Amino acid sequence: MNSSAVLRRQKLLKLIKNLHIFHPWCPKHKTLQNPCAQIQNPSRVFGVSQYSTQSTKFPEYQMPSVTWGVVQGKKEKLVNRVKICDYLKTLGIIPDELENLELPSTVEVMSERVQFLQKLGLTIDDINEYPLMLGCSVRKNMIPVLGYLEKVGIPKSKLGEFVKNYPQVLHTSVVVELAPVIKFLRGLDVEKQDIGYVLQKYPELLGFKLEGTMSTSVAYLVSIGVSPRDIGPMVTQYPYFLGMRVGTVIKPLVDYLVSLGLPKKILARMLEKRAYIVGYDLEETVKLNVDCLISFGIRREAIASVIAQYPQILGLPLKAKLSSQQYFFNLKLKIDPDGFACIIEKMPQIASLNQHVIMKPIEFLLGRGLPLEDVAIMVMKCPQLVALRVELMKKSYYYFKSEMGRPVKELVEFPEYFTYSLECRIKPRYTKLQSKGIRCSLNWFLNCSDQRFEERLQGDYIESESLGPSFCMGGKLELPGSDVVSDEEDESDDEVLYRRTVSL
Image (cartoon, rainbow, N blue to C red):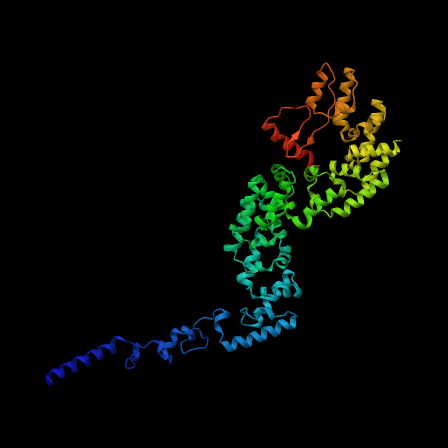
């Protein structure tokens, strides 16, 4: 037993000796010692204390300084926060909203941020509007974001104004948030040179999710007939519709306009040219203006035609404008409310026409010796007269009197004569009539296409006169004299109606 115990003791001592040789932390073998052994508490190597910037006996192992969010202890951070807040107060910046925001380590870093924003053109008041921008690093946030915005088309001189209007952009990531939005806009056929303009107009676009409101609003507009290739120009003209909800804003407006008798196809053409229509408030503006039109005598069945001719009428302060114009026409031409309603149905743009402009053609006609009653009749038949240039009216009138030698009463019967081009239509057609010795009314040879006019010249008789194109509820354009019209012709008629009205 004694010899066995001695043997076990010898093996144990040999094992301990081997451990001393192969483990450098053993104090007996100083030659194999690691510099980290100078640390009194080796377990702290794995704690926060490894980030301490205090010098050690071995500077080559000193940890580098890192971000201000880590280097400071709680007490030091609290002291520096107080210093930074005091500094901001001396500048006039209210630091209350910065209470839960991680601030830089020194006043110098905060001063750098304030000065950078001021160089952009922001004032202390602008910073107070959104003090959270002071939480953005100049090098990590501001410079990359602003550099990218300048790259996509926002002029450097406008960056300050852009940040003032949408300071949240400083918090965004170029790769994760900004670049995908720009790619989405380009995918909608927004021209590259227009991207900067669109963003300046509606900077909040940069904060939208692609799969959210923007995608659904575009998809809905295409579903009602808006051409996909026109979405890009629509965005350039009125980017705000990308931020509008379909269910609560766009669709209710579309449904209401369709309920008035406006065909979806014509409505789609209107939106392509005037995208801002979707921004009109349905309850506060559109419905009130429709009720206003009806109260001024416009027939309910004519409302759709009025809107198609002048879509902007839906967003005007209409009651005041119509009241003023109704009084004006009654005062100057003795036109009663029913006559005024007829004028608005034919040319709703008169609601916005300057009264000084209206008076010039009227004074010209009165100056030619026409009675006030006849001028009033002419205006009610053809309201476009009041928007014509007097210089062109003079030329057409003198040709009518000197070359045609016709009585003035024909102008009262067909005041549309003044709306045709003298050089392109009146002179060439009248010359052909003279060569064939044909005597006809102004309406007969002017109110038709070139092809129909040639057919009339070749005919052996003068067909009866008919009215021009008229708008029919439901969206079809009925052409007098054409009893059978195919579906294809119906579709083209919608286009003719749009060109005839919206393009005025």
